[in-house]
Amino acid sequence: MDTVPGLKQLQVRKRELLLESDLNRQVLRVELGNLSFRVRRFQRGYDWASTAWKWAAPLAGFLFARKFGKTAGVFAKGSLLLTALRAGWKAWEAMRQARSEPDRGR
Image (cartoon, rainbow, N blue to C red; front, side, top):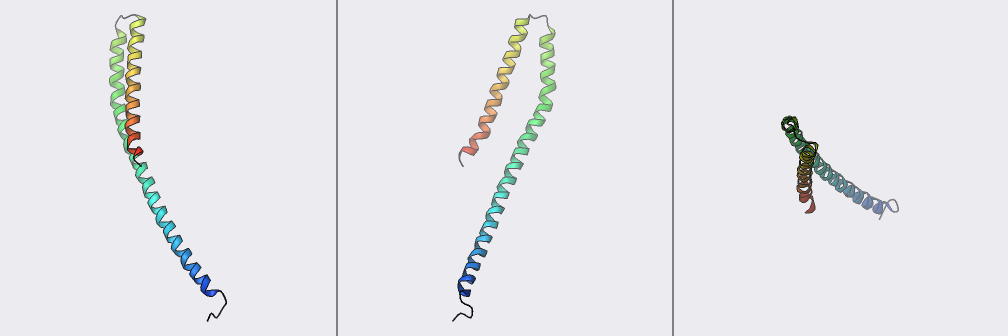
């Protein structure tokens, strides 16, 4: 016999809410861990690109200076620049595609 009418239902409901709250906390921990993992993966990729850029930029500048320093015509200089831009675009596309492929399996 209940001392207070409806107390048993309230206690059951309280237990259910506590269990649901605990499950929600665990889900949040998992999601935060996933977010942290993605941030670290992004930073690692950015660090690699930053390091590569620090080495590639002076080298590219040196090579362009040598090519443009010669007495080539405007068409040859434009052709060289267009070729370099096309190669850069292809490399960027390949890197972007390689980055998106692991996410497709999710």
